[in-house]
Image (cartoon, rainbow, N blue to C red; front, side):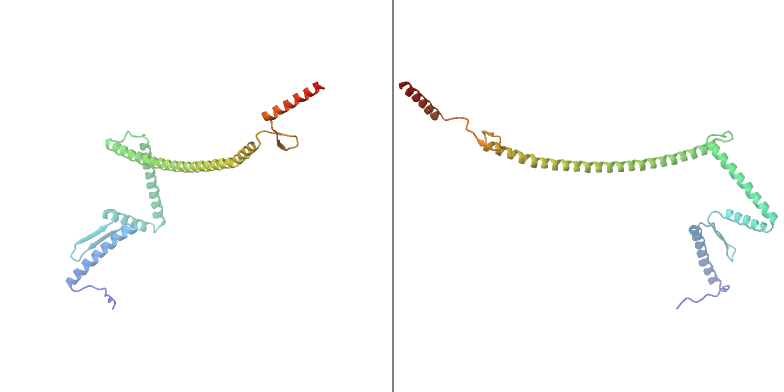
Length: 239
């Protein structure tokens, strides 16, 4: 069964009333804290018990919350008539002018101007502010340089990888070229070698045919021819 609906009325039993107050007070304080954290709201909570005891919670400070409440409450009442509205916007403009003058003065002091009215403490605070600003600027510069160096290294690695691939392709082309040369010139050398071995003493006869010609005669045939010539010569002389 579901939980029954509680009647909202004063609890007559003092003990039960105190227990309920303690539980609901803690829950209310918890919800106020959660609201300030989750929603970035400025929350101020004030609780007085039936015995006059004070319980409060503020996300900033209770004094600033109360002053802000009084100011806005007053402005709300003043905005009800036109004259009050004009005065309100005049005060806002004056406040903005003062803030602008303050910012301009701080800017001039950061640039090293108008330092005559500053004491040692103010100068020390100004120096600390400048050091923190310089530190942040240097960190940002270092971050940018680091990112640029990483990018350059990445591009250099990519170019080196592409260069290596091109060298490998060039070596492959050279190997293929050498193999083609060996196939072409190797077969030509074999053919020329075979031609030289089969016909070592040949000359062309003018018809594109190569016939072997014996350049030397044997010794026995030369002697027989010489003897026949002498016999014919003797025969002629006897006649």
